[in-house]
Image 1 (cartoon, one colour):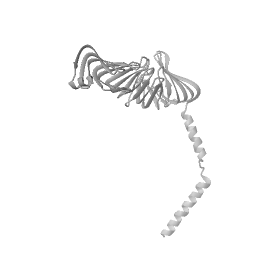
Image 2 (cartoon, one colour):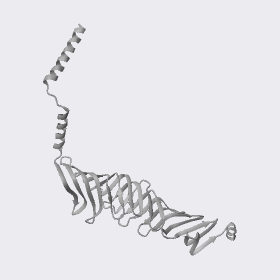
Image 3 (cartoon, one colour):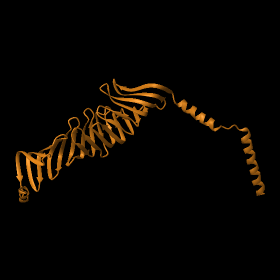
Image 4 (cartoon, helix red, strand yellow):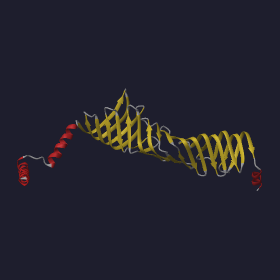
Length: 309
């Protein structure tokens, strides 16, 4: 009896397969693909070529994007822009130019995501994996690797946060910078950098350190003035040059010069001797310490022997 029931079930299944194959209409793969494409097209309300978009709030233009093609979905409020040239604005004038393969614009949230942009301002060229702008934050940012380059130097870090004009931006991720101009080359590291776009100056903040040949300077902060190639260190300054060790509140030098000026509780030591003064100068060309103002000098007998020799 069980064999008869099992055989009957198999027979009915075969009959159903035959009926399905012969009479029930089926959708081919091409038909399914076509149907999905039509479905996606219905989602896109507008498809345009050669169009320009910009965001203007209370008469202020924040950005402008020229796209070769664009797709806009009104329901989601998302615009996909391809092959773009873009600009950020400062005081009504374009301050930063960039190109990118694509941009996603959330018109409801007033946010844009620029994919793989490359651009430049008056001082630096930049390249990041993505750059985001939000009207709520009125900031641009990325969490990815950051590269800034110019004729006189390069800056690398991870993570960037700045205003829309990038007139001031913070670079995180233990950034590194190298500058060289008419003078020597200097390498700067810190916990974070602040870059000032108008002049291209750099402030290294937190565990800041600068290396220029045999000169090493560490401080709470180090400011590099790009145009004049001046370096100013502030807060717990430690200076090392050959056999000279010095401490001060401030230190200043220039990439083209040969003197490091120390001020504010300035102290220096060499061969065990210690010197303190209102100001101390380290003459890197002649490897000497010059004292200014009210000074105190403590010379050990061993140092006197070294001087006699």
